[in-house]
Length: 250
Image (cartoon, rainbow, N blue to C red; front, side, top):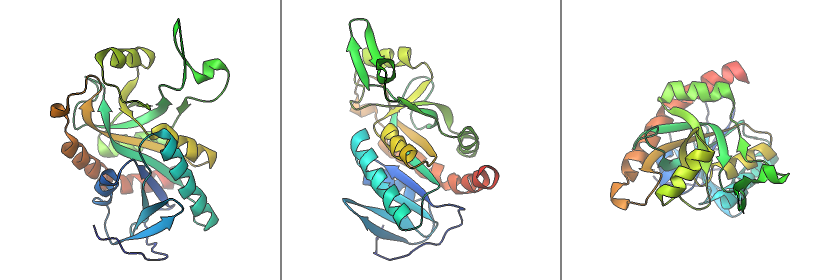
């Protein structure tokens, strides 16, 4: 992809601007591959985003919930100050899938974006921060949006967990499933992106392409290329789905 700095490159068929936040440039580029037309680079404080001719802004926000939240919040603020506020934020990328519900290469769209390790360890087990009397641990995308995107892409629907430490053992995978029986996938940024979107009053969506099973780390079993291809395919179907959703729900 060749990026050129172009001011005001906004040619959109979407009713509202959409921000897509990935962790790394490879995920951002997989999304961009599905979107037609030229792209320009828009520089932000501490980051830059790719603005496509189709009206999508693509941001490599960083790895982990903290940097993802900070970078996404910066992009949301810059857009609002420019008089072009986003109408939707999408957290997107590859991630781990919980077997057997989310096999390698499959897509998962979140009906709940839940931070799995924000809380306290006690003698009786893990307590989420909400049980300590403050904070939140789950953001819920609009049900109508989840339904439209799932139908358009063939994605499975379930909880996507956000973790600061990727699961690497069978014991931890089992513990997460016990605490979150609806979990289908694991990533590192969704909750941070959702926190930033919520602070700006913007709806959020998370979609993951499964590159590896959640559990013991076996790099030979990872299918990153297949997952990135699945992510491209998903975004090739998202634009008309979002147009439909906006027409009926906004």
